[in-house]
Image: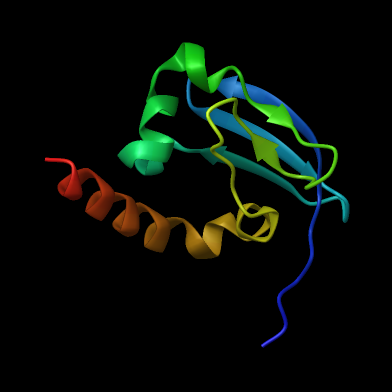
Length: 98
């Protein structure tokens, strides 16, 4: 199965845990990340001050945070298709730390 290559070209914070992402093909996704901010890597992003530190990485063409958290730009591009599965997975990260 071919894995599409997508690049994030712009980000805008639109809520405490939400971003509007623009991709190279003109697609725009408004994503609320609240449901996936769990576990060791993504959990710290639940702090709005940490979440605001998001940046666009010019090499990987995706969003990144200073703690090393990032997301596959192809998943971000297809967020409506993958968000529920990602949220279910995030619940296991929370359970592992409980």
